[in-house]
Image (cartoon, rainbow, N blue to C red; front, top):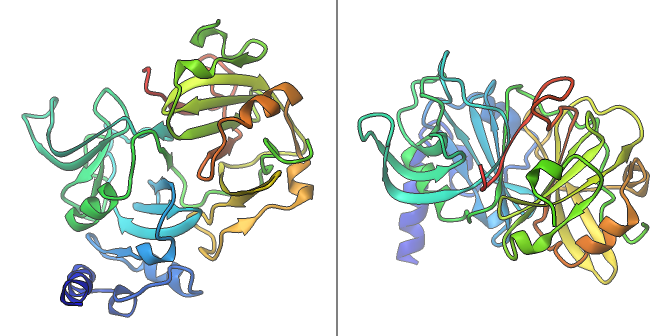
Length: 323
């Protein structure tokens, strides 16, 4: 009981501007959007009781200067951040958590301290505790309040998905993945030619699926390593990045949940409908193959951007453990 009271008191002290939500925020209240918008640098909300266990997905909005942590599709934490300043902009795209270190020192900037470092790229981009002046000020990293960085560090695992978006909103006008619904020896250079399935390249770890409407292509990563690729067909127009998580497997039914994203209501998660599922067509062989690797927490990101370095349209970064 004493430990619980001390923990609650620490959270209240960490949120001087948010006393109403500090003790036991739901993060799904109708007014939480306005509360998040009014946060001051260093403020954060932490409500792990909303989803006590399960896989974590993180979304960083550069325009909002906010980070959102989801567990089992539900928001459990929202924090102010400071991303990269002009000339050192934080790259946008889909990233894999590559490395964690409680007491990391920068290899690029005079051994600058990076407490609770969680690496997104091998060339210097990470999430870590740091100064938050209220605007983009880093050399590309995502700076977090110290207390939030410590809490977030405690719930993450290597290989999870981190989405960094430039816009304040992440539009939802995208197809819901029907991969794994009950209806329906190559290298990285071959990821965009035909179909690839090589799960032995990464036998274990979190699974992330990236679907690009520009390429009509699905890329499958496990623990940040590409293990599969297949052509797909998407009905209708994809106008923005959307994220989903596999909430549960009940017999032969796979329940995909739409993540409540920045800029919209945080109430959720919302289970997808059969009509939404029908917008995406995936080769039957790849669907069957993926049954063996999909588990609750598998993440799907749908984007209108290309994944090819030389593809037409805007390039989306997909950082894998092999890069």
